[in-house]
Length: 293
Image (cartoon, rainbow, N blue to C red; front, side, top):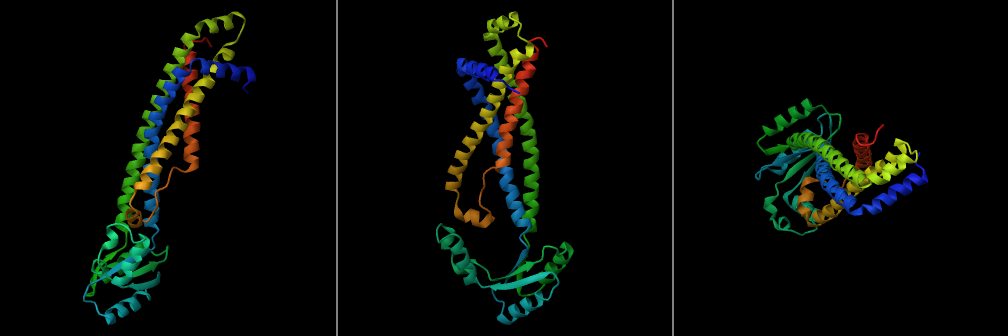
């Protein structure tokens, strides 16, 4: 447990060397911004992946010459397939109005003519429907003369899954680089601070202070540096996120199906705690070489 004396000495030391600590926090913030940005991208990619993976529907796009009898017959046959929960016919005009309501009638895409939106039958499938059964149903529908194409959104899910896996791998590699940077920056800062306070340390040792008593304020300073660096990075990322989200086209968000989201609070808090732990570790490791154990 930290005593009031230890905390007071650490606070006094940080105020005395505030320029050095501020430079260290800035360097750490740059490193954590890189890591936080990678985690932010992965978070939104995973949200989009979950959205498309659990879409639970398929879109059967009809040819322009499809008659109402053919549409009714196809819809009636689809609802009889096990695993299909509903089948709705959406005309070109309905699709145009639905898209206009999602974009609030704003943007260039909102001005597209009705002919740009093909008629379709939207099929809702149960979550437990086997992929093989869904694929067999899709294959049969593609052979019908009134069907132009069938979209199950599986291709989007597979592409997003590959992007998420690549993002996770890149984030892991970036995390290693950030960890090394944090240890190096705080370790160098603590060694420089200790050299500047060499006389104070020697006086403490002469009056009988233990090595633990000498090290504790420096460890606290290193922990505070790491936590402040991570917190500053999260604050900067939040500001950039608000700016980017404000400029993001609403049409793009409607097409993707998810709104961009910031880092979950457990991830943000974890970054701050990680920064504090790395800072304390770096300070303790660097001081072990300069202060006898």
